[in-house]
Image 1: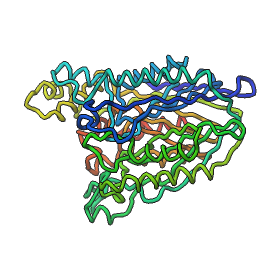
Image 2: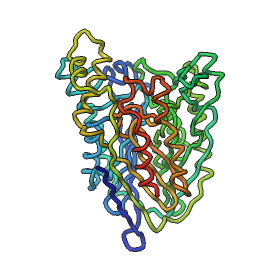
Image 3: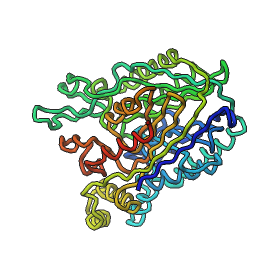
Image 4: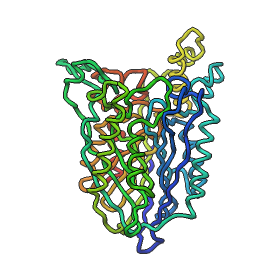
Length: 442
């Protein structure tokens, strides 16, 4: 069953638009689990940050977190707690991760299943995750009394050079021949064209007269330079964000990762230590140029928050009996048991497909579209065509539980992203998501 909710504000008839900015520490401790191994060092701090928009009906919360993923019941927990702090409802809260690979993850359902199987605590630290939520909620409560009036909104964009490249290089038979991941030293992968990407970084900023309050940026790429050893970092996207904080102090800088399930830096990144600052500077240059190019306009007469609920078709490989057997098998690899727990947690929340909420913030001709999972970039490229006028900025990596979400044709092409290990949905998902996007954007 699909449900569409509209919340429309005509500013001339209601309260003026205001914005509160918030930020909380999200850095784990040494020894805490991060994506693949325990944290062994803190290269730079992690954060949860965002904005609360006031005056457009109930408050709207947009939050970006330096985690690899927040999934299922963990995602529900974040939204419920932030909604309580902001005095709103969970359907008006969107929480997204930047998907750094030396950062924590959170899935309360999968964590409980692993603990029950006697192998908990290796991938998830529920108490730490909930402490980050609590700090973020507290930062929202502290920010609300300091909310500032918004008189203008600005929109800009810029090309980001030599960062993104498509991960899936097809052979003559139309199947994936080479997987070009976040780092590559394979000559064929480096020589191949960038492929299908969205090279444009988009920016939306909020102003009170001549004073900038917040800058939201959106760009689609896996954010890894080198990773997997437990050296906690916000990666080159978070470091670029920090560059902009130094260059434009007093402004809240919030970055969202776009639809980049099949996009990474592999063409331009060999995984060496020296590449992280290079990628950082290329990202920062895009953010800087988009800021300089942004054009201000008065707050539009209508500010609108839209949501639609969709049910994603689950992969045929998600069968409870075999998954339960795999989770219980002490001879199976930990990775296989973790994947089984994650899939079972999804099944526990699903009937006739996996329910997720898609959200859209409409600011006159500007739209911010908030989507689940490791979405393929084709969805992001399709969004402006659906909108038929006006800029569309997309954030993916909302509810992380569906895993990779490919286009229908991708599932016939093979490759890691659409394998049973990586994707928990199946062909037919494209029509469901495109239909939801149309309802939000038109």
